[in-house]
Image (cartoon, rainbow, N blue to C red; front, top):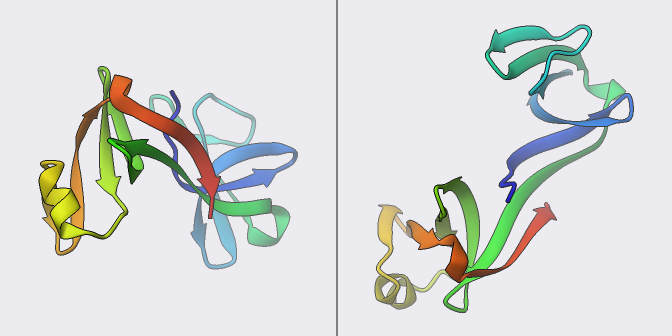
Length: 122
């Protein structure tokens, strides 16, 4: 499963993870590409003008766990880090979620119990 949670944009026909910065976009690639500078192993950066990218969007992975709506934040060894989006404290408490911040509830769910996994553009 690919878990994505962040900005993406298309530049020269290819989609990249991006970080908007005013009139510029920081494009990130996982493999070396022409014009991209290494940041660390498996991460390469190129800065382009914002006007040169298309299909700019925020992408996140959503799912349902035990019938409730969640955002998938991470995946690790058969478990998913999920954040409850239903907004009901009693439900979050019944699911055994941790209060990560005021009104924000997160936990680890077995990937085998998660359903309706999909990527959404916001």
